Amino acid sequence: MKLGIMGLPNVGKSTLFNAITNAGAESANYPFCTIEPNVGMVAVPDARLDKLAEMYQPDKKTPAVIEFVDIAGLVKGASQGAGLGNKFLENIRRTDAIVHVVRCFDDENIMHVVADAGTNVPVDPLGDIETIDLELIMADLDMVNRRVEKAAKAAKGDKKFLHEAEVFRALAEHLNAGRSARTFDCGDEDRAIVETADLLSLKPIIYAANMDEAGFAGHENNRYFQMVRDLAQKEGAQVLPICAKLEEDIAQLDDPDERAMFLEDLGVEQSGLDRLIQCSYELLGLISFLTYGKDECRAWTIRKGTKAPQAAGKIHSDIERGFIRAETINFDEMMACGSVAAAKEKGLLRSEGKDYVVKDGDMIYFRFNV
Image 1 (spheres, one colour):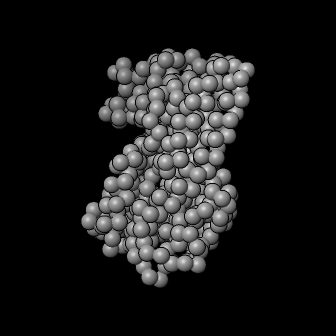
Image 2: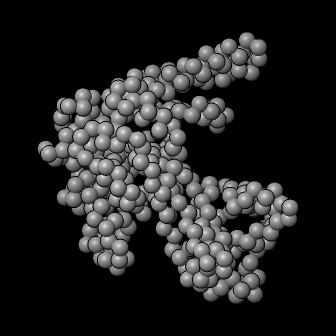
Image 3: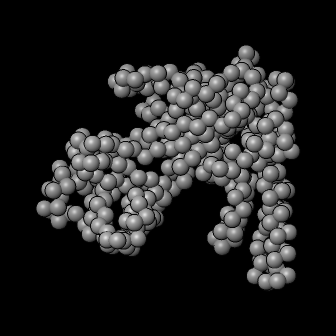
């Protein structure tokens, strides 16, 4: 899974990226301090995997990972090439979802840039979101108009393309009204057609409302956060209250007990990274299954609804091709018994076939033959 962290210049993108990846991207108070996208791989915290590693003492413990990409700050006019325009948009296109960092704090020492990189303007979360949305929409409109032309041309030889042209014409009108592809209302078949266009404004989105320490402490009463939260609810998007500076401090604490105490003092149970990962999984409809043994304990990420052979294919294509059955028990059932052996004695270890839909937390041993 690849998440693109984006936003206007100086909203805290690189500070947040550095905190959650410890990757050391340059973070400075001037536009475009991120020019090439910085990339960081982050292990997905999973207490179930930790417990299995404790039980099996494997040679190797491998968590699921998320790839975060810190994308250069966008300004108004990016769809026409302003700022780092086209490069910025292409970097977004390669991601599975967007983490849109929105500035929700006032600080006269940090410039707030929207259009002109040298002009400081008042903080306006909704205006910032609209600025980026419009740039993505304008880039999508160009793509959709090309798809209309292509489908109309193809329809001269094959009438089945007439409907595709109609769908993209309706989408073009929707985009022209300043609305994102995410909010385009259509049926499942038409949605499948729209998804072939790889549109920027169709990507799932998490709004990371970046506040200062004071604003984060009482974020439910923070007027900037309230604006972003209300917008996210209307769009069906996720919103994540966060303080990038505090996340930097948390990232520097190596001792788990110290980190837990720090979070307790803040009045939160999880770090921003843990909450962001949780949001990402919910947004993209992802779950994890587990493989186990003395050689390796590992967590694998799949989409909800994935069947056993396709889950096996995440490990190796040969296992999917030669799939026989999946010996399965859910982690919670196993823990209630104390071990896989004890669960097997009680008849709880199941033999599942090719139509079995894998559940979150399933522990699976795949039988196959090639």
